[in-house]
Image 1 (cartoon, one colour):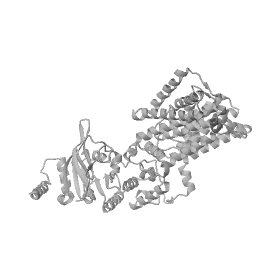
Image 2 (cartoon, chains in turn yellow, brown):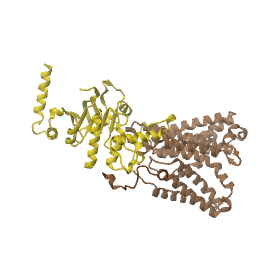
Image 3 (cartoon, chains in turn yellow, brown):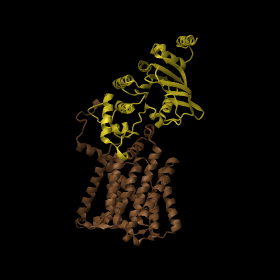
Image 4 (cartoon, chains in turn red, green):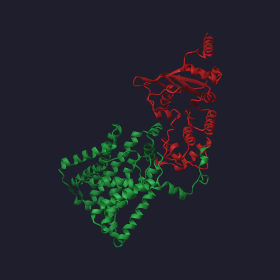
Length: 270
Length: 333
């Protein structure tokens, strides 16, 4: 197992009396691809926003490379090497692609003036790296002129700038056509091969199963299951488990697997 | 791929000429309005508009308008509005007048006025941004409040500064060189620096990002409140400069100084092509908007119409400009 990149301990977030996240502990190691699953309202989005620093947790600690980081904020999150591709893509649609890629971390020369040439060539390099090029747009195109998939490309190019250690992809394929979805997955694979960690949030469990090595299932603000790909064996097992949490009438389909894991751990301890 | 539906003749690198046209659509539109307006004036009164005095009388007071319009473009771009700059202008100019009256070097008075202007801008911005008030209403209130603070101690009396005439500051900032008012040069320098600040500086691009999508800007680590307050501080700076120049041009400070600039300045921003919804704007267009607004009044009277026509044509130009910009600009949000 690699170095522990980021760890959340007992994170809670309440809105009034309602806990969106009610005590979640999880970690992502270096070079690891973790799939985060859960139904609508399970707390996935809130957890992502906490990791990105956009939402302040009401309780809990955040550790980066083993050290606790106080005063967690969007800037701290980025300094820690975390980049988030938000579900709503967080783009300023009246600005150019270049301006969106460098939003909040402009490349400047003396006295804060922009290094326009360098920004443009960096943007071109990033776009080429993820195969996000076309004859019909340039780095100077206005984002509002792009299609949904192309906008996703801008958000992803922005995320890989700065050699982020952990990239959070929040439902990156929602509302995309099949070919555009395939493009996004090709990117995820290149990022995985480059050794960066990925936290992948998705509705399509088959997709998430293909990409990730370990899965965390959230249910009503808590971790309902944490399991490796080897243990889960198949996407169908994960789907059955999620149906079980939604309608907990029958037996837990993963009971045998989890019991085996527990026995294995006890054996290891003995 | 959805981009297939778009025309393929558009190349990845459009010609520089085409890029310039598209990138400066709004300000070029404003320039067109100005040219058409001047042609009409010229047609009606060629004898007046072919000679220098009419331009000189506009150029005399235009700088004051430019110092106000330019920062207001930043404020509108960031998604706010400021109606308190006339009082800030009057207040800073008052500090300048008091310093000069008390025998200080005008340069010290200028520095004091600028600091006070920026401080007032910070106060107005902080009230709007940190207390989460509507800038429309809060700055309206601040305008009355600050004007009141001028009126109470001065009891409406003006300050005359005839001694300014002999000072180096006056020669440097407000004299006439070969019949050309020197303050125009300073105002142009201010406009040019601001154009670069808006288009090529971290401050300008953050102002646009925050005005375009504040949530997105915050998620990308931009301190959106700080950026918004900074635009008000910049407005305070512009208002102070406007106040200083206006006082030097007239050798007099009036307690009502600045009041007359509220509506023409607001009009100039939007006539210039900066839209109301934030995220985009044009400093060069705003400056040309100020030129247009300044010329309407002078031009109509000089063109032989009575002063009663001024308001009608003011309104006509504003409405026609807005219609033109609406047609000329694509709105993405």
